[in-house]
Length: 480
Image 1 (cartoon, rainbow, N blue to C red):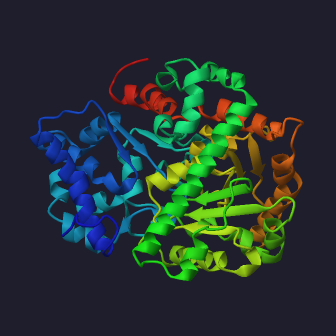
Image 2 (image 1 turned 30 degrees about the horizontal axis):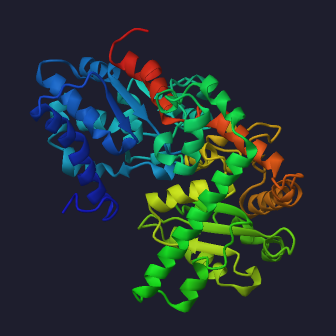
Image 3 (image 1 turned 180 degrees about the vertical axis):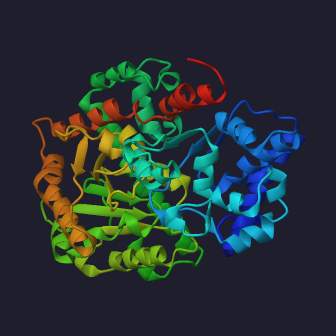
């Protein structure tokens, strides 16, 4: 059936789904007698709701221009995709097939209708993001950098408007802290922050209480979270083995040699090619030397899934799975299968460093690093998406790597070398340096600084309040 599977089928099947979501969604709300004060569409998938709402106004006697203006006034549109290939487009012939009888209901002829979805990058095809940009009066990207990219991509919608002045703003994504802060760390927050911290999580001043957390208390909680992760990985592997689903090679790749006292890097997300999950394997000998250092070893846990139709992403997973079994890495690489929210929550709290290697500027925002930072896990990331805003240039709350000006393989090589350099000269020494009390006090200070500076700024509550103030109120006709 049309709605039995979210990702699947051909492009025409996708359009059928989007007709149900957009046009069907509006009609469902009307049948339920729900009258939104404003409408918010994320990505072009819901774009057809704009046409249906225009059609409703035209049906009452409004011209297309008047109807479109009324729809614009009450509509917010958020783009999440910084590359042209990520936006849904359909041929004119496909649009004729499904909308040939719909054009007149909008007061438009065929050419005027198709012009609503026209964009230079799409040729003659009908682009749902272009349609959304034209019929939504309030538009945004999902990070400051993504806002810049989005304005550069779509300013042609407004002839004569240069990119910097295109009417597209940005609101950076955030994460739901009560969901993603681990119970171990939440216990510290309950003790050292205000009792209502969950209800005031967007307030930077509240997080000054993090400074009062004793280093030993934080480290104990963090090590307990690491143990929770290792226990989860072991139990999942044991369960799969007991069910007969694992062969010995899979057991090796599941992380049986992971240790709580070793510096642990985490990489868990959707396996899209631009995220470059295999970047560190560009220099396998250097990586093996880092992982197997006798005095200061390192281990890496990978997890994630690929889009069902993304064969390149699936190959990346297969490569990491194969690398994890390679004896040269000494069992210091694990691939955690069956990635879900439970495993994700254990990872963002149970590793020491969150590794992020996108090819800039293709990371619209990213959120996994926000979840990690809220748990005191330090980010080591290319400066793209949200991290361009969160990172402190003195590396006091994590490490940032400027994207290389090179392209392709040369860019990958340069940025892999930059990551290795940071690991060898900054990250690893900081983790293993111990004070007279046996604690990595400078590391702990950086971890607490990550919580203090990043948790409020990248909370979902801050994000939602920003949407309300900057977009929802204007879209609902409420003045500040």
